[in-house]
Length: 228
Image (spheres, one colour):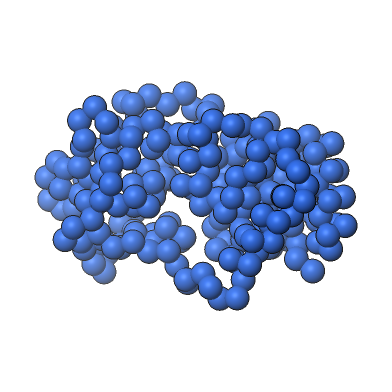
């Protein structure tokens, strides 16, 4: 019996999901906020997490990478947010799927089954690593290495680099990076993104010629160079 963690601050939604999941044969644990979600995920080791983004103590997007730290846990976002940039941000941060409220329970169960199948059976590689020149970016473990040396990044630097690494060689717009790496409560500005990019450049290559690792596509966004 797979254990599913339901993270939602609305009691009625948690009750609906619990009833639906238990009827389908799943074991269910619940959390009503981000703090409880992290604690429950660490202790209960769920096979999958159904995550609402509108939590009272933390935006669900910023919670996603932390919940995915256990690499064998599939996270499905179940949210009333409909904007494309929200869905793209969630998927870029590692969500297995995005289900919009209100949802059909049978469709939700079908999507959950797909996520669990992809999770199981050893089909997933041990770690999702991307090589860019001398850099190895391990997205699952949030570890970056340059040769034999580990490069120590802040959480925000990891979040921004992860978005660029998943689209290595392609331009990622400013808005898309900000949507994936900053929560809605942080009121991000492009100046903050520029600071993070500058710090990344200084850490990822020594010496660090501007644009050597992360190219600036003027007025559009940034691109992690895939050649080399």
